[in-house]
Image 1 (tube, helix red, strand yellow):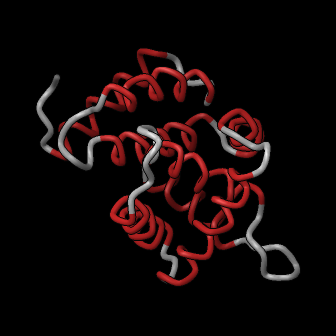
Image 2 (cartoon, one colour):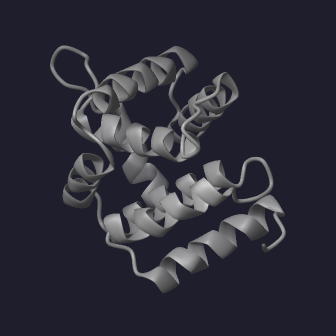
Length: 153
């Protein structure tokens, strides 16, 4: 797991020549935003959670994580969506890195202690979009639930 985190950390530290975020960074963050807004309501608390998660997991300053969220929101505001993100993520991340990312998404989903109906629908799509087998997605879900001490539904 440390290798995955180190790889994702290095991905997030890479920036384009002008200091802008790479499309991979934006795609990862956009997926997290999609997860947080599965109920069509992206709350300030959810933004703060993603910002904290980005800061903690990828050793990003809070301001940088906030700017990344803004870039991802702009990306999602266009014609880009979950499938555009998945194309980038599948091209740039290996299997273990995509599984680590899926664990981050599960953490967002379970932040309030249970899985909402809309979140459940989204998660049925996220695993396959990231080319993760259902049994692996469920294993990752169970690991996150156990770590976060969330009761099974």
